[in-house]
Image 1 (cartoon, rainbow, N blue to C red):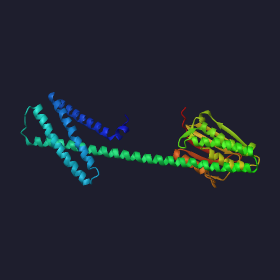
Image 2: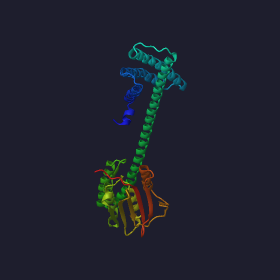
Image 3: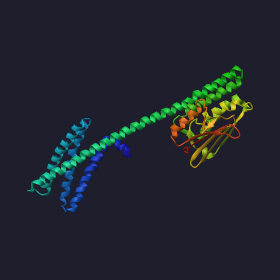
Image 4: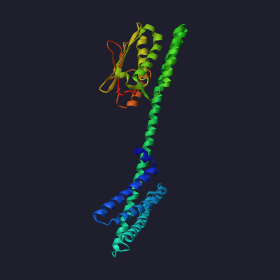
Amino acid sequence: MKWQALVDNRQRFFWVLQIAGWLGYALVNYIGSKVFEMRDIYVFVIVLNAYAGCLMTVPLRYLYRKIWNAAPWVLILVVFGASYITGTLWAVVQKFNLWEIYRHGYRPEEWFYYLQQGLDSVYIILCWSGLYFGVKYYQLLQSERQKALKANTMAHEAQLKMLRYQLNPHFLFNTLNAISTLILVEENKDANQMVARLSDFLRYTLNTDPIKKVALEQELHALQLYLEIEKVRFDERLSIDIDVSEEAKQALVPSLILQPIIENSIKYAIAHLTEGGKLEIKAQVFANELLLEVGDNGPGAEVYNGQLQNAQGVGIANTIDRLKTLYENNYSFVLSDNKPSGLKVNIRVPFEKAKK
């Protein structure tokens, strides 16, 4: 059984600590009896004393649970009072076991011996009470921590879903506009092909969990579906070059992380080129990191310090937000001028290999 599962089960955790604690008490006393060369019958007395202490402290648990939310001064008074009464009663039991079983009715004459024995028992019960409250506060702290982590995880997942689902309406709006244009110019065959490919692409996006990462190979398949839609629009004007290493294909990436970047390249670069344009998609693994690159040969844009000066649309901002949410500060997203012309996007994320 895992430690955390044991801590969460308060009933079982109490009894484990209760029994282990009193066994430890008995063991310490047994070692002491060997040091002072007590007779073997004293071991039986030790067991009886530990058993009595174990039983007599159980009611304290239920008493402390009832006053748990009381004022601090009430808690202090009850803990000290209950510990004193329980410790005194336990001392009486210990004296009875010692005198009647081990010493066969012998009674010491020194009065301070009685007081010392009683105070020792009270101190032990006070320590038991302190440990009880310490463990109880630890359990509450762990419970609150788990609740906070759960709330943070739920907020994290909700943010990821919101960012991922923003892509579909954005992309769908652009594609439907293109289909509408094709219908208006009576390019019904192309419009039909685009609707069919759009259906396949949307089916993929709906079947993919927005929280989980997917293999880059699967992501490339989704990109092919998307690019087939765009090829209906641009025909031979759109050229695509994909260079991805075999190792990189097995890397885990956020689903549809490249699609908005490629969509931006087509919308703001390729679409403005009369003779058509070229898209380059590259991926490789280096130094346990996945390096992704998307470049175009469009007119380019004004880039300063790795970011667009006049960013348009939600694609780039959405992608950066998703990367930040998933990887915190362990990622990079840099835009730069492509050579000889165009814009290039470089993404670096930790390399995580997909399970087969």
